[in-house]
Length: 384
Image (cartoon, rainbow, N blue to C red; front, side, top):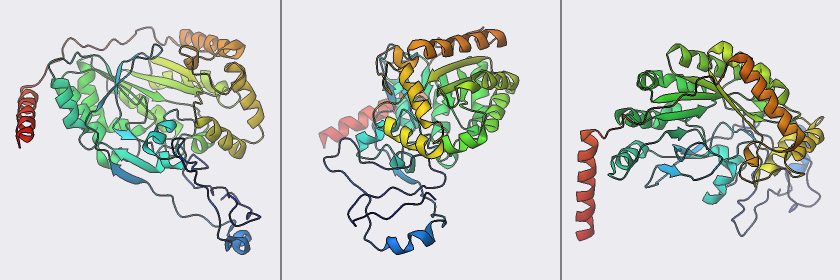
């Protein structure tokens, strides 16, 4: 546990203690809140601080809340993203990756992008039902559905809740293509569904592998699967005939970017045929969260890493400009792109671009009936 010196005055803010198995080191108030919360002490901790320095904190437990959303397909028109629709079974992510670009979305809920993001998870129990209704709508036009583009569909709570598995069953019933990105070996649980979809050219899966260094992974992505387990997942998926790829993302200059070629080599050995990469992105609150983490976990290289990030982002820690936000700019960004291209060519990756099939999409009769019944019930409710 990180020792916290008692404040000079009882009302002075004090640092959040380090919680084992969690990524963020603080829990700042949402940027939309009109009032700012701070941790303070009532004064009793001062005498016990030295004695408690080595004590282990009790686990910071995950709190699950039902998400009452009425829609499940999220749309986007971003010009530098290769999909226009996605499904997020969860809001927040228990993996706790410190660099996760989805963290700021928790602010919309009045929660912190820090520890709240990884401990206060909203799940969508009606996701499969909502999806079936949206896919059965007369005006729906099929295109590849992306999963894992915001929060991970296979984060630890999925083991029991099975929201993602229910979604996959619906997509399979509709012959609807899906592309998945995850950091969790749990995806192999659904090989039965995914392999059947892959035989119909309806599924592909990418494992995100940021490092082969288990110690760095444990600190940076505390509840994601260990690197070797992610490679095992690629192997299991490929063996089952499911197109499998690797995302070396994010690449963080001065921290893990030197591992890019080694990660790609290991992924190809496991059976990956496709690959991608994205440099570190630090929008909104993530800048402060990542800098705090870096100075705590890698203090010897913190300033160098931050300097290199600025060199890739026009002197800032982040640039939200379309196009450059996904690749960076300047000599370091160009070199990273060239290294990736050279490794991909050497390893024979991306030779065959998987084009998932949308032509076989159909609405099952059961879904048509359910949609008609739902519309009838809605009319009757309006008449009451």
